[in-house]
Image (cartoon, rainbow, N blue to C red; front, side, top):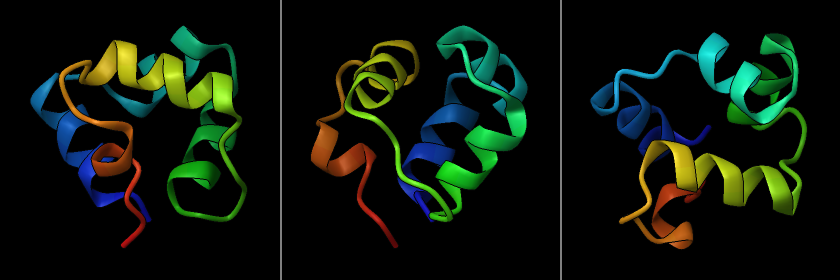
Length: 65
């Protein structure tokens, strides 16, 4: 699970549904990725950081916990 990502989404007031729409995947797919069931693509990682928290490093934002 990506707790830092979830926390940054809350800070930015971005729901899973909204973020999924923004990056072009289904809500279920994004939930699976955040929960570690499936992997993010590199393009998804870059887009998510741009949308959610551009100032946060990729290493910190996507640190698995």
